[in-house]
Length: 474
Ligand SMILES: [Zn+2]
Image (cartoon, rainbow, N blue to C red; front, side, top):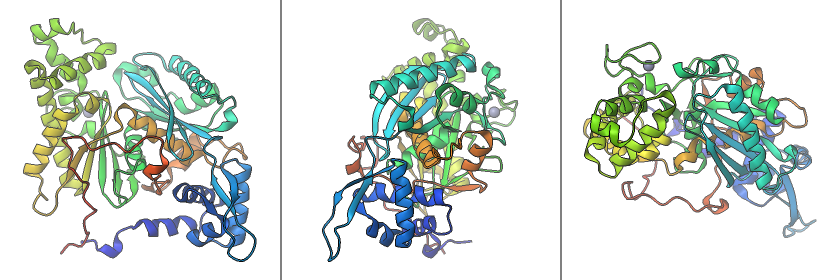
């Protein structure tokens, strides 16, 4: 069935929907988003923009001021009566932390309520360490990050968002599926981190965080159907359809790494055969390089479980620099990734695919070339519309930035009640009961509001991002 322009979710419609029939906390979050997009705004303007009554706005704003999420910043011009008090986000007093827990590195970002990254920290990856050890390290790292930015009290931190690999169970407890990290199975990472840091923690798939990171920085049109294809030790895809994250039946949609590309192919860690991960993941690339005596010697390859990622990074770096042997291996991996992206684009009729995560940061141009080639030549819809494929500009921070926005979105307005969004039930609540979860902070910060300039388009990217095309189809 065809979709019409009228059925397209516009930003305005999404906005209106956010203010009607919502709980006080949801209304509060929506008002915070509105102030974020307006910059400096009066209560009267908030009422006009949201459609809420003056009394409702006054009540909500009072709570947001009590929570120190908003601050008053002087007075606007009088329009006849009393001069209106102007409101602004409290960008110097409240923060959120985003963490990407990855085998190869732990990446932290500190963002203010406007979403600007104001601090960052990188430490050694989780590798094969036991979860308790990683939790202790994360708690110390968070403390260092906050101390470095002279944030003395955890009261100033709205919460922590954690981007992790693995499955979420029905209670929202992240679990690892990697056979090398069985201790992570059943480990309640969120609860342990809450105990260790004293802060609310919200867990999310790394690939969903990466998609939210792309959305947050505003590079993806609100109406685009896009997939953020995330690659670290495995592959995953944050699927966003008409402004909402597609969740699947158990909030685990997006396990692209286990898409079968060769029936009966090589054994995968998931128990199946011929999955993308088994054919093209970093472990497979390193194993193939080990079979080449020259490469194995040059890069001192071991193939050991805790060396897979750095050894892959060395091979990827050499491939990017033009080393013929390494290039052949990465191109073979990229051929499978291109096939997976082509299949996804065909199945979901996508507008856009963003390649994100460590693997695509290390050898992005090779994977990008393969994906564009496959989709450009073979997409079933190529004569109907183009599919934009591009590299994320957020580099190794993409998942951490998205995780921080998850913390902002999930943890605002909860401090007073003491309710922790990261308790398993509450996390599932945060994720929502709908299979398609609207992106919370649909109003994205404008570039002028961010401390860093917008990324410039790389040479291999299209010069302009096309406007969302009309949805009218015959
Ligand atoms: Zn698999």
